Structures are given as structure tokens and as C-alpha cells.
Image (tube, rainbow, N blue to C red; front, side, top):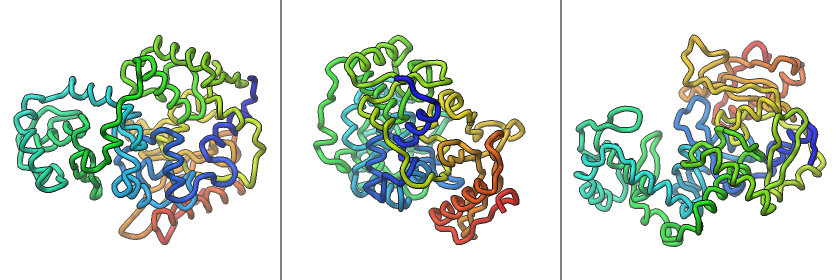
Amino acid sequence: MQVTNLQARRFLLKKQGLWGPYRFRGKQGALAYIRQAGCIQFDPIDVCGKNPELALQSRVAGFRKEMLSSLLYKDRLLLDYFDKNLSIFPAEDWKCFGRTRDAFRRRLRSGEEIAEVEEEVLRLVREKGAVCSRELSFDRKVDWAWASTRLSRAALESLYFRGVLAIHHKEGTVKYYADFRECFPEEIWNAPEPFAREEDYFCWRVKRRIGAVGFLWDRPSDAFLGIDGLNSARRTSCFSRLAAQGEIAPLEVDGLSKPVYCLQEDLALLDEAPQGRTRTEFLAPLDCMLWDRNLIRELFGFDYKWEIYTPAEERKFGYYVLPVLSGDILAGRIEAVRHTARGELEVRRFWPEPGVGNTRALRQAVAACAGRFAKFHGCGDCLLPPELL
């Protein structure tokens, strides 16, 4: 099917719930969006909200941060685990990640040291119900992840990675772990893996990522991060099989260098007429729609890099900068900081995209969005930079 660039952009925005009236509302809307996306990426850094909170506030009307915490740690309808890197996904999908848990069992760092204390850690977890690493006294340093860490932390995280423990709750950034089987019902932890063959597993994961973004192409992409073993040949095989089975459909988009594929059931979005007024939203830096930066660059003409890991002197924009969606274009980017103690949200800079036109209407829309964003964070004041006044 041949589609214009404008049709493709609006298709993607409709799929993401970012075009027209809000399609997702409240707590159930947050759950519905995550089920549609498969997962949303988690990152603990909180400058103006954590990544999953930012993703949900842009597309779920009435979303509040405590809704996500409730879905995770009270209702247990969602869980924290590895999908596209560290992610949040529906609890019913736990059965599909046995291969991930097996990989952690095989590739365990500091395995001997952890094995020495594992039974004691599990005893303490059973005794206390939920523990964090500072409540354990295994203080010697071991090799772990980015750098060495206390054995207490490594042991808890190892058991979590292997699916023995789950995150029971968080206090700020501190994780409390509990027995997975005490946190979730048997139909979650005892469900059999649904894949008869390895090919079925990879096709499920590829299709899930296509659905998360809206459409993807068969080429290397950050959208496929976290799918261990998905090499180029396997990826192409998955696209071919899914297309042959009628599960995905190809789209030839004007201006794109390769065809993209969407879920077959999403083709109806191409025929939907625009409804209501266009919206202006601040997007999360790891938003599902932005997972393939090359695709976004070709489709929207928007070159986005999350510069949080870029040395300060090499940044073009700032440490924690959010894309600004206005209507069907990515119109610029903002740097915003929440000052909790002062009850203020400070928008430090707004950079309109070259060629978009720094119009009064755009500035007013961004300023109004910043006001809503401040309320989302519980801030009474919203400080705007001169370019938005």
C-alpha cells in the first residue's frame, strides 16, 4: 500500500494515542496503553518525571503517577522486568520471558559469591516479607553490572533477574524485593511458555515491537534492543513469516528509504478521518514512538538524541530534553526541571525546529502544555523562558 508522508505520520500518532481526542483515560487507560505497546521502557532518572510517567502523561487523560505505582505494586497487573532493556509490561506476559530468565542463570556474574549467601538472603526475605539491600549485611564488594557493588545488592538483583524475587514496592529509588510467588498468583508464575519453537518466540517479540512503535522496517534498529539472539537473518525471517501469515502488512511511504510494516489490524487507522483539535504534548525521551531514531528522522525530519550520556561540552541542547509534538509534527524540544521543594516547574529553554516556524500559535500551545505539565507534577508555578513569554 502506497501512503504519503503525512498519512504515515498521522497513522503513527493515531496508533500511539497522540492524535485527536484522548483515547486512553485514567488508570485503566494507562493499563490499556501498556498492553497495546507490550512494554514501556523504564529509567530511574527523574528530572521532570521518570520515563514511563512521561510516556503515559502525554497520551492518558487524567493520568497521575500513583496510578502506575498502583498497577505495579497493589493490583499486580504490571511488573518490572527486562524487555526493551528494563521495562514495565503486563503481568500476563511473564510466561513469555523464560528465555530471559534462563540467560541470567547462565551468565551470572560473581556467581560463586552469590551462591554462598543465597539461602540466607531467601530466608531473610521470607522472614521480613520484603527487603532492600541496605537491610542486608553482606558488605564485601563483588563484580557487578557497571561496577563493583555490595554483595547484598548483587544477591538480591541476581534473584530478581532469575525470577525468584519480584520488586515488591519502591520507596523513592530504593527497591524492596519479595518472593515472586507471594507477589503474583499462580496463573502468572506457573503458566507454561506458549512457544512451541524458537522461531515462534522470535516472531512474537518482533511483532510486539512493531505494535509498540506502530510500524517498523526490516533493518537494524534500536527498537529491537533486548531481544537476545535476534540477528539480521532471524529478523528478516520473522518479517517474512509474519507477512506471509497476514499478521503484518507492508507500507510504501513517500520519502522513506525502505518499506515499513504495521500490524494487519492497524490498517484501518489509515482510513480514520482526523477528529477534534490537534494536541501539543511533551514526549518521553525513551517513548515507544521514538525507539527507531532513524525512522523518526526520515519520517518527521526530526533528529533526536537523548544527550544525558553525552559530555556537557558536546551537547547540542541539554541534559534532559523532551521532544515537543504539536499536531502532526515534531515541532521542537524543551528542557524542563521540577523543583519539588519550591513547588515549581522551570522550563529552561524551548528550541523550535528549523523550518517549523516559531509562530505565536506554537509558542502559546507549548506554554499551555507546560502549564498542564506543571499541574501533572503537582507544581503551583510554571516558570517559562523568554522565548515562550
